[in-house]
Length: 183
Image 1 (cartoon, rainbow, N blue to C red):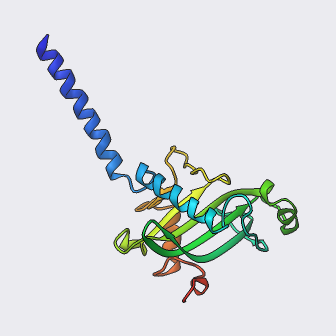
Image 2 (image 1 turned 45 degrees about the horizontal axis):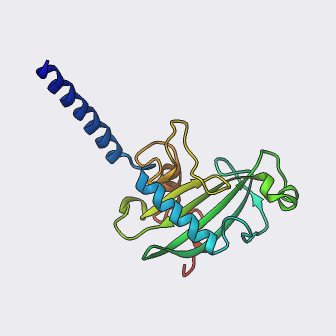
């Protein structure tokens, strides 16, 4: 009986260890990524770039996966003790929505807020140290079809997703590089 108990305890420890190893190997969606994304959202709220009373701009036509109408903001921000480039894209829908419809009721049409924040050097040097995140309009993290939170090195090493798409934009991974402050 004692041998069976020891075996079962050992088996349970192995299973837990395997789960922890998988969590540590995740390129995105970890608790650490979610915590950082929450601090980033709070920073954006303080800057009036997210949440109630956020600044608005004139929406322009977009494309999938972001939205049919978009607002984009380029600035810098500080999270914890680090300042970096910040790109915020508000994604409006559904397909066929017009700029006038978004302007008349932006909250009704806001589907998501996608963000790139350049973290400290060494965060992800292969991808210009960008931290990627997709929020729902209320600031909670969106999830992919597998239930993974979309924050961190989103879809790193995969054939589709944030990093795969933006890697086609050049070294800085931005399709509109001339908009960043100081560029």
